Image (tube, rainbow, N blue to C red; front, side, top):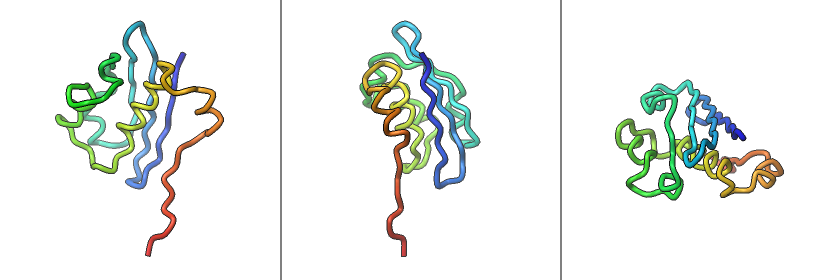
Length: 108
C-alpha cells in the first residue's frame, strides 16, 4: 500500500509526502520546493518508535539538523502519512474527510 499527502502552504512551497510500509519500517519519500526541507534528504525510514513521537525519533533528529519554521505543517503531514500507512489512522476516514485545513477566519 502507499499513502500520498500533498501540501500547499502559506509559505508558498509545495510538498508531496509518499509513505510506504515495508516490513517493520515505513519508507518516507519527500518531494518539495522548500530548500530547508530538502536538507532532510529525499528518503528516510521510520520504525514504530519513530511513529510514537518524542525527542529520540528520526523527525526530531531531522528538525535539529535542519530546522523548519515552527508553523511548518510538513512534520505533522509526515506523521499522518506514516500513521495512515500503519493502520493507526483509518484510511476510510481520511478518504471521507478528503483534506485537513487551517482556515484563516479573521485577519485584520
